[in-house]
Length: 241
Image 1: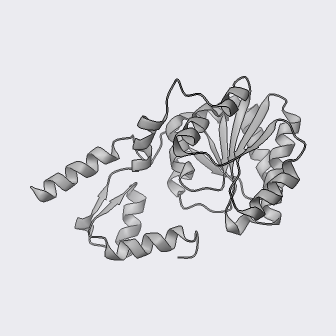
Image 2: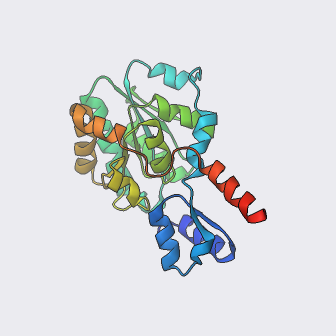
Image 3: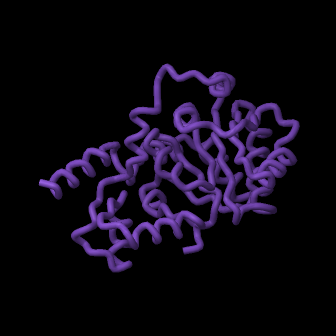
């Protein structure tokens, strides 16, 4: 219940009162069954977050930051988890800076979390590097289009692990564990840990080995095909019929 907090706490609390459970994957449905949920109340539909990409991602989208990086291999970064604050986050940022200093065609855009501790570490570790842009948080449309413009994503966030593969973007998860094991199994994401050398090695591999990059970017997203909302509506209509 504590990892990740508060997401897992919220999920379990809502699950106690829910009469229907729309699971993104079969593995998630199996977890609900193990918690004692009624199998007749569980439906595997995919994640509605994938559906949203159909409405937010646009070919004509313009943002000055993505325009700045359009001729580069852009890495979108997010990092904010409380368990990573301190030395783990510094290690993560040092790995990213090391990559940027080695690969002159790489640029980084990092919408920095509002947490003052995160901002302090980001300023200290990324200061003076003109190919790393620290920007204010983006809205959902802006961030989805940032992911689309990116070569790869480096994150410790949760939902991005499900959304980015739908755009064909490899995801390096800067954590030691993930609540999205389906992504690891499908090959859409890879756990890079929080150690500088491990993160650097995994990122460098994606930048230098086209076949590994291709396999990750072309892997099938296990979290759905963008039709979860249609499936949920059909289930609700059948129940009310």
